[in-house]
Length: 160
Image: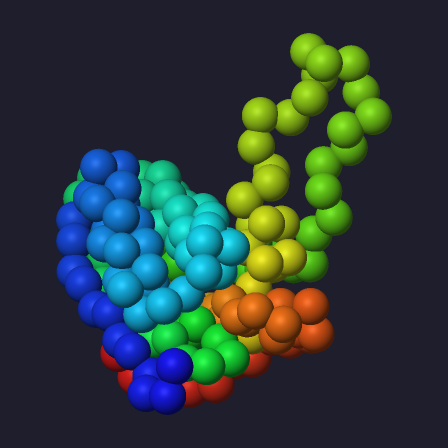
């Protein structure tokens, strides 16, 4: 892949709209020549992040829109998610270890895996609140870059 490819979309913050956006992103990534492992990893990261927007950013508001930008280059897939929901609490981005799984089946946690998966499968994870806009950025390393990635966080200025 010589030229970066870009995908942009706006959609309502709903579970069904997230599903449709994920299908569209997956189709674009495949059309750009990414292999199934890269597509799957990107879809998992996006599904977790976008579902968090629907479930948490707009939980008290009830409705809103999401803007998704995906830029694919030779080594990385850069993702930007913008929404106007409630700000993300700072503790959400703390480095996480997985929930304790050494418990009885009925005591296993229902959640707690999403941000851990995002942090594990992406790099350069950053969040900023710019005015009334949440901006989540992350990079999903491609191919052999995945094995060599170093999870770094950045808080570069962002202008939606």
